[in-house]
Length: 432
Image (cartoon, rainbow, N blue to C red; front, side, top):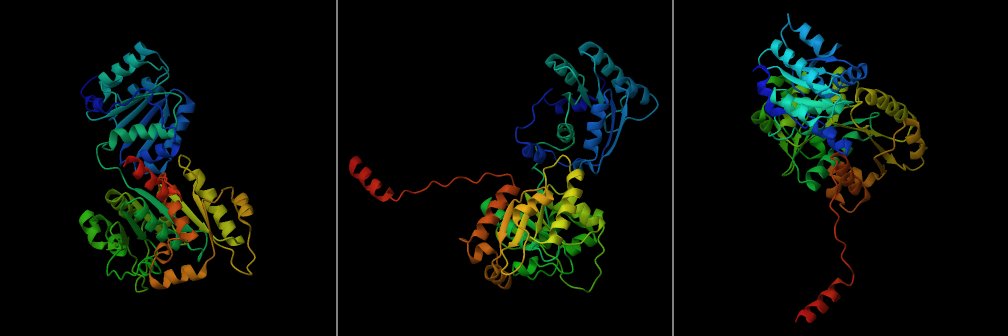
C-alpha cells in the first residue's frame, strides 16, 4: 500500500472484534466524531442501509457522509478524477486474493492522509494482517451494526489515549412544573457524591433558571456569557465562569433576569456543551420546557435523556410525543429514562403509574412520591434533598438514579450482624 494510507496502519483493530455484551457500554465507548468527510462504497444494500443509519446518528452529526453502491471497483473509478476524503469505507464480497488486489488498486488513487476501513464477508486472520500491513485502518466482518461502524471510526479519529469524553445527560420536563429541574439538580448532586466524580450542571433556562437558587449561589457570570461568544470558551474561561457548589459539583448558572431576550443558536449550545464535556466526566443539562431548534438539538445530542412527568393527562400526551420523537432520532441509543414525579398529591385525581407507563410504552426508571414539606424546605433553604434528610426515600431514589444514568453498579455494603460484637469477643478470647 502506498504512503497515502500508511499513517492509518497503527490504528487497526481486531478483524472481527466482538462488541461488548453490555450494549450500553458500547454506546458509551463510541465518542463523537469530528468534522470529517466519509465516503462509502457498498456491495450489499443491507450494508448501505446500516451505514445510512450510522450517518444519521448524533455521534456523526458533524461528519459529512455519503453512501453509494459499487464496492471497491466503483471507488477506484470515482477517485481517478476526484480527491479522496478523510475516510473511505469500502465493502467487498470476495475472498483474500481478489480483495487484496482490489485494495492495491485503491491505494494507487488514494491521496496522502486518507484512511480506509474495509468491510468484508470472510473471517480470515491472514487477510486481516495483510490488510493492516497495507495501511488499512480496520477490517470489519459483515454483517455489521451501526455502533460497530461508529466505534471503528472513533478509534481512528479520537485519540484512544486521551481522557474519555464526558457524558452528557439532558433533563427535560414533560410540562412546566413537572419538577425536571429538581430532579436534575438532586441527581447531579448524588452523582458527584456517590460516584466521587466531577459534575457540572448547565442551566439552559436563562431567564427563569433555578439552579443558582437551589444551591444558594449568586454567581455574577455564567452560561449566558459563554453562549454569547462560544468560540472564546476554553478550559480556563470555563473554570472562571463556573460556580463551585461542592468539591466535585460545579454550576453553570443562568442569569435569571429579564433584561435581555435570550435567542440561542444551536451551534452556540453545541460548542458550550462540547467544551464542558471535554473537561468533566459528567454534565447535567437542565433544559427548560420549551420547543426551539436549540432545545431539540440539545436533547437529541445528549448521551442520556431524562423526561420528568407528573401523573396527569397533559404530561402523558407530552411524554408520549417526546418518546416518539426521541426513539427514531436516537436509534442506536437506549430509550429515554422516565421519571414520574409528584405521585400521591392528596385529593388530586391521578393516572396510575402502570397505566401511564403502558400508554407511553416506557416503564419509569423512578417514581417519586409527593412530599411537599421535604421538597419545599430544600427549595427555600437552597439545599438538596439529601442534605435535608439523607434517610428519606426521595434521597434514596436520586442516589439510585445517579447509578442508573451512569451505568454504574453500586458496591454492596456488607451487612453487620447483630451478633457481631459477641462473635468478635469470642474470637479474641479464642486467639488469646
